[in-house]
Image 1 (cartoon, rainbow, N blue to C red):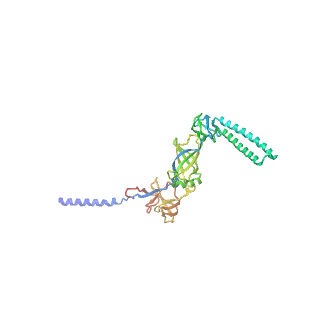
Image 2: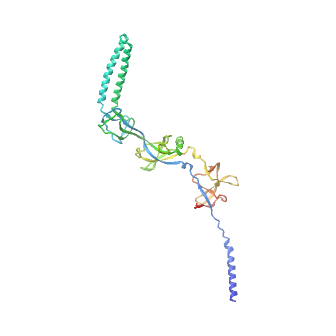
Image 3: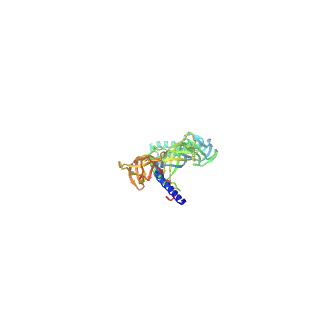
Length: 360
């Protein structure tokens, strides 16, 4: 009897357990579909480059005397600002003045002799050859006098432009030779900034020149968070020796809130985009674009970060390239779209980004 009772008990328990299974199998959980996403980049920002730059003087000149002599006046200090035409240095001019007096006396004598021979020629008392010789001698004397006058003016060194004394190369009372550098004068009201552009981007410099509305900006280490606008001045079409780069020079006015000197380092942010580049098409893989059955419109699926859902967006497509299909309109930079797994998507469907794993 005990054996029969146990058997009946096991059968009843098995029936209860099998009766519960249909109730639990009715609960169905919809899985969140994984998709591969792509962010639409700003094509314009991709063409922005940051270059290390070097500050140079907009104009620089090593000034020297054109004649030899002893310096008797050199009142300037390095860093001092001078105005155009201001006297910078002076030589002892006594020898030049004496040479000038000698040339003046010689010219007066020859000029008087020429006047006499002019009268004698009219009276036919001298030959034409004698008169021509006197005339040539007068011209030579006049040239020697002008040269002596120039030498006197060469004893003074004047500023050819308004600028700053960058370097004083000699000291006062020193004897200098002709064309020996005395001072270095820099024009710092306008600053030049030079960058080296690689050959792959050198052609874009011309595009920048044609679209000057896109100003470049420069920042200095003294004020890294402050940017100053610069404009393109010139660019070289000859490669820089020792590198496959080309020099491009930009200019800016001397900032009022910062002293910028030649030789300083800086960073120049340059937009190499053409003026119409903002209308350049976006390239998408073919797997991202579908045709909607209801109206045959071209659509892509845009991912919403906040709701983790997708919605269809109508786009206008262009030419087909080896790298993808052109999307002319319908998308904005920064949007994330589905590029794989679009076959079973619907509006407001929850999805999750497919994570890349090693070996996938």
